[in-house]
Image (cartoon, rainbow, N blue to C red; front, side):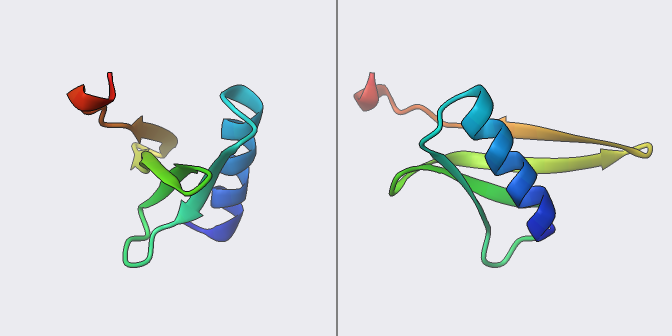
Length: 67
C-alpha cells in the first residue's frame, strides 16, 4: 500500500477502534499493512481492488490461550 493509504487506515483505526492502534507498512508486501497495539502485533489489513472498487479487510487471529 502507498504511504498515504497507510496514514488514512491508521487514522481510521485510531478514530474508530482505539487511539493506541498503529498501522505500519509491511516490509516485503505492497498489498497489505500490519496492525499493532503498541509493540504487540494484532493482525493484517489487506487492500482489495476488485472491479474498480477498493475495500480493506482486517484479519486478526485469536489464540485460545489468549481467551
